[in-house]
Image 1: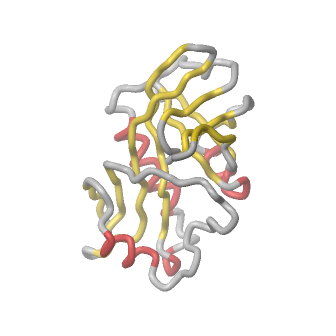
Image 2 (image 1 turned 30 degrees about the horizontal axis):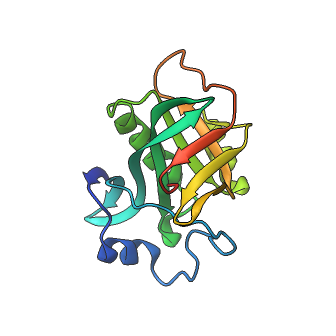
Length: 168
C-alpha cells in the first residue's frame, strides 16, 4: 500500500471509491453545500484508490479576529476495505501534510457518530455556535465541527465562529 497525493478528486476517482453506494457520505438530511478540496491524500493498493481525505484552506472569524485554517473533509474508505484502520491512516497522512500548509489549526465537519475517530486523533469539538457561508447567506452548521492544533500549544479561541466560504 502506498500514500499518494494529488489535486482535485476526479469524477472517475470518486466513482471508483464510492462504487454503487447510494449515499456514501450518509448525507441524507444534510442540506448544506460543501466545497471541493484542492488537495487530496489517498491510500492506493496496487494502483487502486482505497481511502482518501481532502484538504483546503479557509478563513474563519472568532470574536472579530480573522485567521486561516486548513479544512479536512471528504474522508472516505471504499466499502470493501472498511474496518481495517484505513480511515485513521489516511487522516494521519492528511494531517502530516496539513501541518506544512501554514495555518495553525485544522477544522472538520462530521456526523456525531464519527467524532470518536477524530477525538482519538486529537480533535476537539468547537463548543461555540458555528455559522457557515452558503449561496444565500450564513447559516448554522448542521454537523459537529471539530478542531485540532497543528502547532504545539495552539488553543482554539472561545466565541462564535463564522466560516467564510462553503464548509468542507
